[in-house]
Length: 94
Image 1 (cartoon, rainbow, N blue to C red):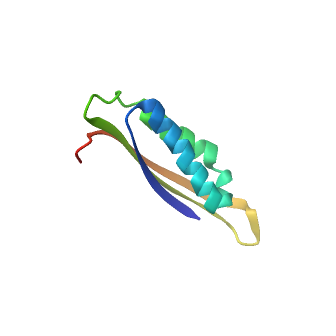
Image 2: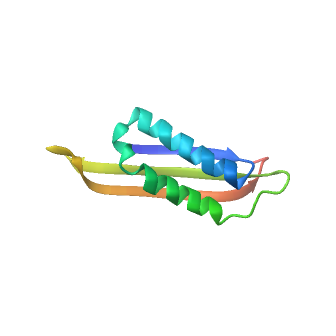
């Protein structure tokens, strides 16, 4: 199963919260992602932590996507997991 989402936020704290909320939405639709939730959310939040706080007129933009793969005979045996994070500070007009 794979997922993809993006968020915008006015502060680093808000961005970190929105990442957790969006990942919980992923789990609602794809319960298997309970397995990688903590790792993926921590990764996204860590990248947000590397950014400067936005100045007036700026925002934080984060996009995340990832996937899990498993053995069809044993759906609780995951064979791969991946997450990709892009976190950036940008002007709100973009």
